[in-house]
Image (cartoon, rainbow over all chains, first blue to last red; front, top):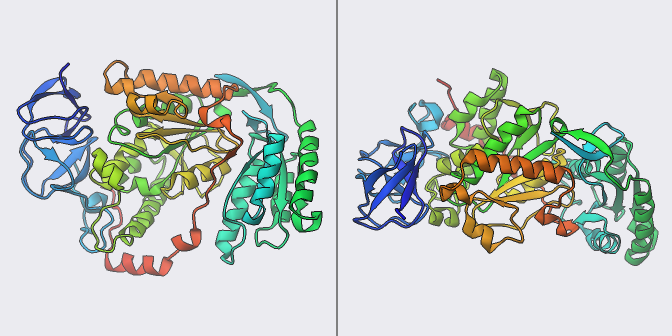
Length: 108
Length: 403
């Protein structure tokens, strides 16, 4: 059986791996992804997120059609998205942007 | 959707007919345990009942009262030590006002633990005779309050179990019922979605203010301002930020409008989707919603947990089939087939609704095998830090601004 990763909403940058993904494998993006094949570029543990497309540094990362954090560096499609390259803006004492919607995020 | 229940004198309908022993202070926990063990009455063990923080004392009393007044409770024995700050008289009187049988015993006046136990056993037997033995009254799903909870979440909770419960919530609310979502900490990051869900501007504003208060609290919990508010287990499981966790959590409440926000342990007066102000600690959150009249709890879990409530069935729905198989004793239903592609969210949602109606009709939830269960009240005196709140809000006003 082919390995799958679930994409929830069209605008999402990430899908959730339902099994451990290994480099050079192809994963099928299910859910809204309709089974689109995606090349895996690095090991991604089960339950973790794979980038569906290239994400620029400082770009907002979406899952569930909403912002879950900001990219700390550029992330290429097929790579692992987690705490090492995605940072939340919520609940920070000193660096949240007061003037933007949703407490530091732009409207998506 | 109908069920057979127990109509109470205050008009509410219960799905269980428990005799509840309330120890009003931790000092008499063992006496309550002894009585419950020997009679089949239900009770809970707790460390509360004596505090010099007025707000905390009131919250403690109100949570006990909420349990005593609960429709799943047919009669109550209030068990007091005699010198505690929680008022056994206030608790007894408030429960008595609903019209249900209630008696009070004071250990310091009854001759000690063992004498009180003996009198308590007789009292429970007498109370039991005053309640119906069979559920004979017709109830409708529109009279039910269903609490929504999650605990020990994993990366699949937000993809399977939570949205499946959301499907069930839509069916229950569509039939006139009420669902209660809580744990405001796990709404931080999901403001935009919740804002759209508010029935009117007042509810939208109140909810954003409440979430902001919890966000400020969260911001003070990290020494280094790291912004990490999810557990090591969450991160290992694949959750990256509180935003991601929250967005997955709120799926439990389906898609219908939010009609009311209630305080900790307060009973909703509106029907539909209700939000209760509770912290993110699942046991305190379940306790608050049960005190607020929830007949049962739909509890989603990634890794599995046995926790329950002594008066309300707490039904576990696992996010994956591995956890279901590993803890079948504790988990009532698995949403794991969604992950494996063999069932849709809607199908699992319908199974959850069917389970809710079966349990309303008396089917035992898996946590209900034992008559003494978990209980926790949030430490409100620690939560109240208005001065710090104010100062932080002034220097860093990250209030939610709707577009």
